[in-house]
Image (cartoon, rainbow, N blue to C red; front, side):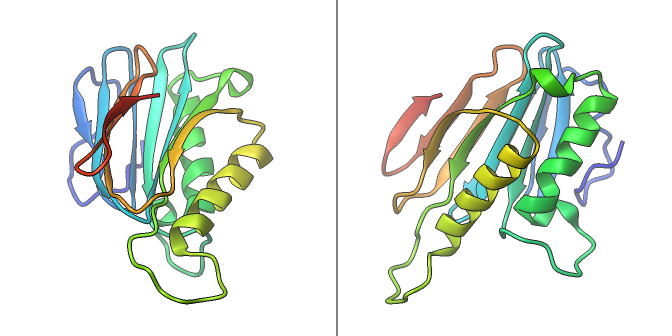
Length: 169
């Protein structure tokens, strides 16, 4: 299994808590909990197959890839790579669903362009749509950072923010 992280641990068939770093993703089964923190303009994309109890979480920094080799860094390459790893763990493409969090506007700049957070959210929606994965819940935008805790077993995505409190989608 290819996991985009600086750590050497494998996430293959574990039942534990797995930390997902920035520009990283991981896949788990059954009772695995996937966690990430430091989502500002980055997006956290949780994809799951509830029937097979397979789930994944990506922490993507930028909307579209360039020549960088780290697929997990970009929304448009992280989601397909995550789905491919999930399928290798038994996920069924037609049963996949997604939840999305992050994409904040952390700094107020005067610009005619969308913020990087907005572009990340739009890229996530577009990429999920292109893969025929329904987006069933989201907590995006605003001006606050987020930390995520995703339970593969229940498909609950718990979102914590110093400014906005805690919620579960």
